[in-house]
Length: 180
Image (cartoon, rainbow, N blue to C red; front, side):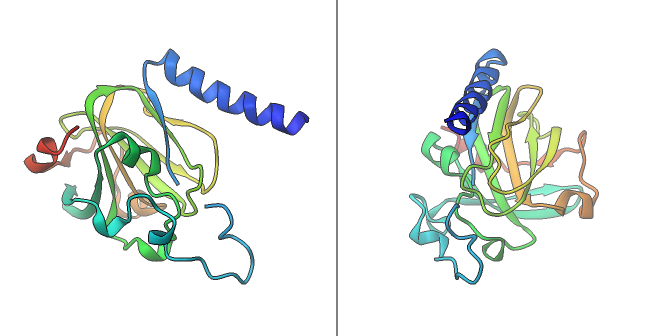
């Protein structure tokens, strides 16, 4: 019983923090695929929005180009990269979450089996906060400042490429047109 109460408390604290900061908590990220010796099913079998069916774009940061799947609708924001193993994400791939306004946001890794780097960006593409998020955690990783875009890539990518807070992403005009 104490374990369930703790989980409820953790969820409640994350949701309360999102409301206090005027933001939102997005669920990104599988349980069940982590058993030793099991072969995970392709993510498309578990996802409401298979990656191959999402719109795509390219985003450049410091000369590094990322091919990104676009998460534009609230249901796509919620699903994020859930159930996607690292083998289905190339080193130059990621997901760009596109929101209709700037506000403080927070993401967690529920059902996300791949560790990810996350970059919160203002409307002008300026990265205001980055995190490296371990898989399957319910911890909320906040943007700290209002943001309109969120980029997720495989963990370690930002450090390897020297991408940091203050850098500016070149977000193509067609992404702005895709906004909800």
